[in-house]
Amino acid sequence: MAKSGVVRVCFVCLGNICRSPTAEAVFRRDVEAAGIAHRFEIDSAGTGDWHVGELAHPRTRATAEQHGIAITHRAQRFTSADFARFDWIVAMDRGNVQALRDLAPDDGARAKIHMFRAWESDAPLHAEVPDPYYSGQFDLVLEICERASAGLLAHLRAKHGI
Image (cartoon, rainbow, N blue to C red):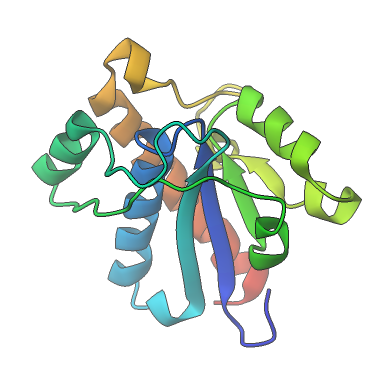
């Protein structure tokens, strides 16, 4: 955690247009609802650069909007410099965990990388958030993000005394 008392969290998927912007928006909503937004810096990024600058996938945005969540994020790529910027780097699947580990400059940076569904109470061990870009499971992704976000927020509040 930064000296300012702000916990910095980045959600990461492949292209930063489906899963990670959904996770970012759901987590941001949860933090705001808890009245502790001033204690967090929340962002998302992708390990690939195919969609840099684009808005989230139209179905990602539409699914979120159906649940009262606005996603206005524009895709960006996660870089090695981001390890210094964030305290918690939350990946959507094992492939992105590996890409992040490969990019990490040292063991301290690698220790910041976690799987998002690790905080979903009933998720199987090493469960991944499925990529709706290929599966079309946008509703399922939102549901998973809501469950995992609640668990992550509870964990971070306990860990950082928030």
